[in-house]
Length: 176
Image 1: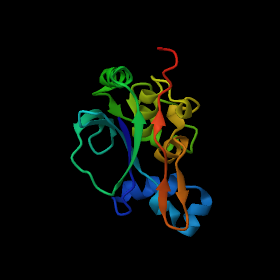
Image 2: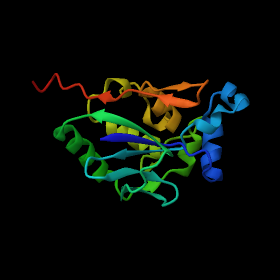
Image 3: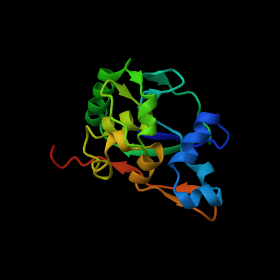
Image 4: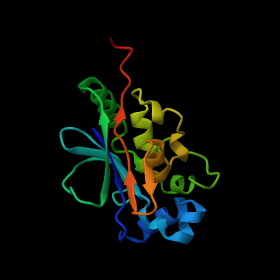
């Protein structure tokens, strides 16, 4: 499994708005907001990705076919059981509606709609079904794509304008 963060500097106006809105204040002035992800997906080992899509207005599975530099890819060291747990949880949410108002909840006190989801919320909640230490403290309904990326331990290199990261590891000490 992998986490895929969409960080194409071009994108559409929605991508640019999410990047700017969720960026730290200093990043708005120094231009680093352009490197902030605007979307996140979970990529399963069979090549299907899962997320909530505003463009499609729903939570869905989709075949991943764009292996480009627009994506920041963070590997998740998980076994087949952990991947099956995450996929089962995702399957229960497939078809739910996209939460447009919830996206504003990154920064505004908006009440969570439990039947609607946005990308980083559903991805965080799905990955919290397995023990990944770095993600357990995140509140899914308040987690932007940038907050999830930072929650993985990724760091932005301001000088060279790239994201440095390590793979996430599932803690399987309870199974052995």
